[in-house]
Image (cartoon, rainbow, N blue to C red; front, side, top):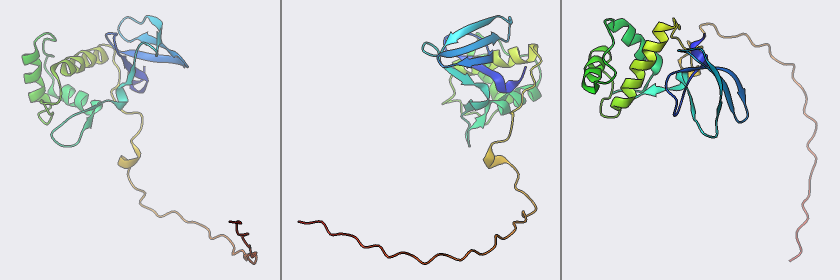
Length: 164
């Protein structure tokens, strides 16, 4: 199971792997219980985990960065039902998070999703670097010059004036 194929679906708990997409929805497999079902895009919204960003005091960061910080923090995850406990956990695990703009419900989702990913041994990584973050080439590419082509003489064009 790849992290890049995982989505969160509005109105449904947990995470899902996209098996196939259709014009009016997608066929999804639950990461937790491995059940497969069709989910209509007319009723639900899909959010790829790779595209989710979190507010911080600086630039927004990808959810992957938060998950890596949670992994490094170690220890046990906070109780999902205690908002104060979750906030204390994130103040320790990722202190740069903007706690005024990130709601307690969002932090609860992050804890639940991280737990699901860890239990199912999903490698948490982006599929590829965004274009702006890719390292620049150190060598300049060699471009062969195209042979010079003589331009044909330009034709004179005359415009007809409109009759007023």
